[in-house]
Image 1 (tube, rainbow, N blue to C red):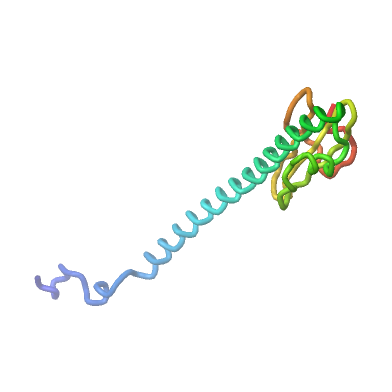
Image 2: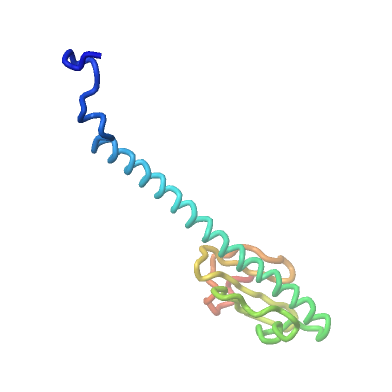
Amino acid sequence: MDRSMGLGRSSRQEAGFTLLELLIVIAIIAILAGILITALHGARKRSFDLAALGYLREAMHAQALYSLDTEEYADNLGDLLNKGLRPVPRGIEIRVLSGGTTYCMVASHHGGTRWYAATPEKGPYRTSVPAWDPAPSACP
């Protein structure tokens, strides 16, 4: 082809991408990375919530075993640990708010967004009361 007529690419354009093209590609990659990081952060919080709920269910089973042996519910976590409940995983907050003829336990994970409560009548359920709130208002 005859380059003098302007039909082909100049030698300057054959060298690679233009600055504008590179900036557009970098911007697209940055947007996609931001979307991915946001989605992963939400998934991480949900996994923390599920970890707290799973441990609360284990604690409910330990309460049932404790009540079979003693005919009352434990009023502290130490009694449940002695009944075979595994140690509290790192990051999970759990409180036994009452004992005797009934119990209420509240659990959450420090990185999670939800709090869960459990009673023998209702089982585990979501509540709006933080786990570190000592008032038994979480369990009606």
